[in-house]
Image (cartoon, rainbow, N blue to C red; front, side, top):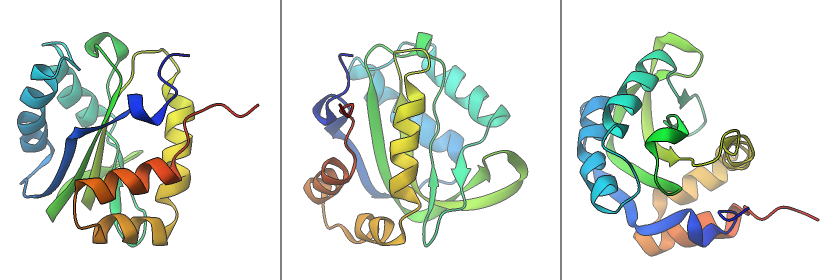
Length: 162
């Protein structure tokens, strides 16, 4: 599998710290040009991600900080990525599997997959970190992009175990 290495998922230009967004759509409108210019997504991505999030919301009631993990179908993605965002003020985001419950997301991990079903392993690895309160606290307290990337790369191993 070509995208198993951390270096092929995390990119310094796809880490955004301490910006405010009023809602998910505003977040997508802001991040789409960055992803598009970087060659990560197709023009269809913006409409697709907004639609999918409205039908299948992705906020997780993790403690002490809420994480949202929006993603869409592989046909809208050119190369795999994880766009990591720590927001300045929590963003209202509908809870996964419960559209009626709005959580306040502190982190948004926008995921881009290129392999059908390839996201299952990635989601499991991310979830194992997100259920760890000390990991989320460390992410929240990180001072800069380098610290965020170091934490993610040292805690999330995308290589298959033998």
